[in-house]
Image 1 (cartoon, rainbow, N blue to C red):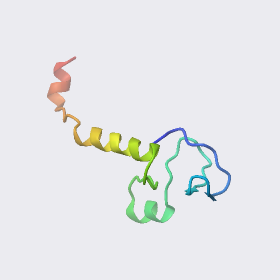
Image 2: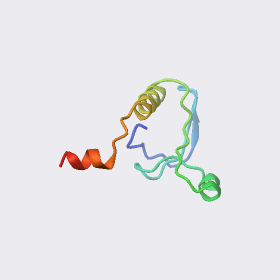
Image 3: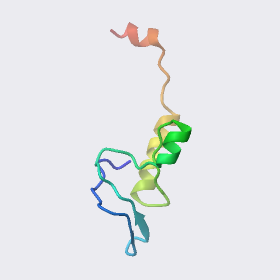
Image 4: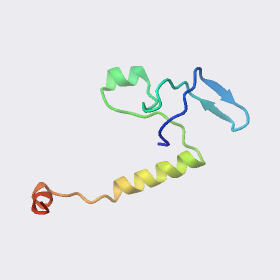
Amino acid sequence: FLFPHEIVETSYFDPETNSNVLMCGDRNVNYFNPYLLVFCRHNHDIKCILSGKGAKAAMFYISDYITKMDLKTYEVLSLL
């Protein structure tokens, strides 16, 4: 959510927002855990979304994903 990310050289705690800011070297890459990536072999995005813009973005993403229409291949081809 909230791409592109800000470039952050080192992780730190921000007392003003009471949150951990994770290191980010590339604006367009999800936050990830290398151990989960290797052992589970799946895409993941690690982010704490307790409140604010992140929670709202997650809520809209999940509700859009749950309610999306499942189009069949023949339905899409008939539109062409």
